[in-house]
Image (cartoon, rainbow over all chains, first blue to last red; front, side):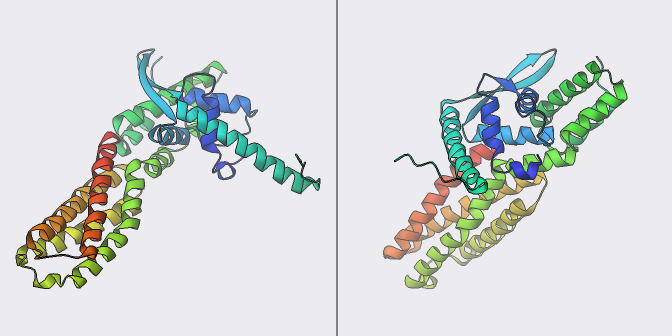
Length: 112
Length: 192
């Protein structure tokens, strides 16, 4: 899956990768790679600016630590980030269900 | 484990474009990737090359940071809202016959020059793809526009014999922009 196709979804993917606990940038990318079976063709270096954008939006919080003599920045999901992730999941389920129903030619499941 | 010269070069290329902390964070990840490829059995050269291929060229990473920089977003917002502020003041000053106000000529010249300079650097901040230039240009634009708003508000308070609701509305718009610039300025500085 190419970076172009991920536009608009990268933020949700990054938030989801931080759901299990704090991770540094490369660990976030590794978690994404693992959860998608390595099908994301995204330059790893571009994940860092996206993490900074999410931090500026208050959805994640970054903190420096020292590991193996190197400074490392780890990110944690904030409360606002958890709410955003939950909202985006719900939106994605709706979107996938609607588009899936249309593409498969099946009727939209009625809840009435 | 010593850092491979390719990674050192990558670090230098990033550090030339980005603040030290941003480059340092990316390099930490690049070293992790390099170590992963070495563990998979690649020799030092191949591992470093594979890690760099995975991360993308330094120019690509720097360009992404530039696009994500708060200064870029702030500059775009100021660029979009600028004409609104301008129209408000234009209408207000025409209605109030501002050319008859006892405002010294040099204040008018300074106001015009600072406004024109601010618009030019704001345009540079929106258009440039270089991180440091975006920050410098946005910082200058924030200072310039704050000066314009303060000068405009002071001119109204000191120079206007009386003013109607249009001038009041323009003053409110300027005050709102001043507040936005003051808040944004801190964010711009924290990312530079």
